[in-house]
Each structure stands twice: as structure tokens, then as C-alpha cells.
Image (cartoon, rainbow, N blue to C red):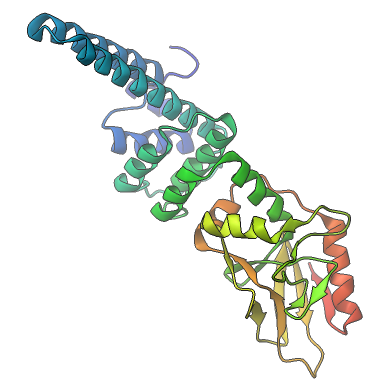
Length: 296
């Protein structure tokens, strides 16, 4: 058995996360995942179909080319699927739920990822697969559809935005410094952008691109407001207790927040924190009389 091959008889010797991944895949493709075997069978059956068609139907050259094209296309798709599956093995957590990923979700997953040949984007899809296998329901079918059309440059743009994302309750909101406008601290104005200390701004047009992708919601008129004097914000796993001055009843943060799909994809993209940016934002708030306390 080669490095990447699995068979039914070997499942008992595999870790629980890998076993669950294989069983989830089996629900979608109808057989135990065996990368090399599947590839060889697909190639053999495709070749056989051409031979039989030529012998029995005396097919024309255009039909022959069509069959050859389909054969080539399906082999590439199979290679893409198997590459994503193999990448997902290293993304599986040590602990996974007992529940299998839904068959319909798995089928949608393979339908959406089969044409992804870019290595970087395959890694993103691999993390989605591993996350869903570990905890079914983590990624919606809508998110799969959005991810399917996401280009590498758009994913990189979203990754750049990640350093300005804070979690509040069940939402993710974008907050930037050092500029301030009538929308509130660190807002994105009609001609403004998002940026941190010493960092190139993500321009307003970049926000429009991400909005078109379905990753962010942009509301330059109302923005995102927290209507509470005391609340918690989380930045890259660090929690901060925020208390507004007595005369303030709410805090306007930003007109940019992540959609549900954006939040789900945010959880698996390459993220880079910027603690200089974080500290500058918190100092800006303190200068405005806002109490900031890091929670242990």
C-alpha cells in the first residue's frame, strides 16, 4: 500500500479523525476513499468507453474528441478532489464529533471544489473539509458556493482585511485606525479605506470587491453600533472588557462587518495579527475616556 492509499481493511488502524473523514467521503462518493485506485479505475473506464464506442458505433472523429475531452476533464477533477482530500488530513484536529458530515453537504463540497487546481485555494478547501468533518454544520452550502467563485487575489484581499477584524458577540466587525470620521472611531467613509499603523490602506473599492464576493456587508450610512456601555471585544483570541464613559450610551465601530459566509471563511484563511494596530486603537479609545481592560 502506498503512502496515500487507504482500504477498508485498514480503517481500524487509523486515528478517529482520519477514519471519520474517510467515512464522510464514502457517503458522498459511494466507496471507501482509495486515491490511486479511484484514479486508475476512472482512467480504465474512460479508456474502455472510447474503445467500445469506436468498435460498436464507429463514432466520428468529433465524437472521439468529445470523449477524449471528457476523459481528460474528469481525470483533472479527480486529481483536484484527491489533492484536497490529502491536504485535509493534516488539518484535522485531534478531537472530532461523533456525527458524520451530511451526505448532501459532502456531495455539494465535491461538486464545488472539483475544478480548483490552484494549490493555495486547494488548501483553503482542505481546511473547510477538515472543519466540517470535525464539527458538522461549521460551513453552510451558501459558503461553499461563495468559495467556489472566490479568486486567489480576492482571498488574499480578504486575508489582508483579517488583521482588522474583531469579534463582538456572534458578529465580526472591521475596525481601523488612525483616522476618524463622522461615522465613528475608525470608520470607513465614502472615500476612505481600512488601515492600521504604518500599513497600506485597504481602499473603499476593495471593500466593494469583498462585498460583491459576499464576504462583507458595507453600510456607510449607519455603520455597526454597539448599544451598550459595557461589552467585550475579542482580537485574535485576546478578550478586552470595554466600558464607555457615563455620558455615552453606544459606540460606533465601523460600517464594515463580515457576513455569515465571511465569518466562516475568516475562520480558515491565513490570518495575520497586528499588535501595533491593536494597541494604537485601544490607546485612541482610552484618550476618548473609554476604559479598556484586558481579560485574563
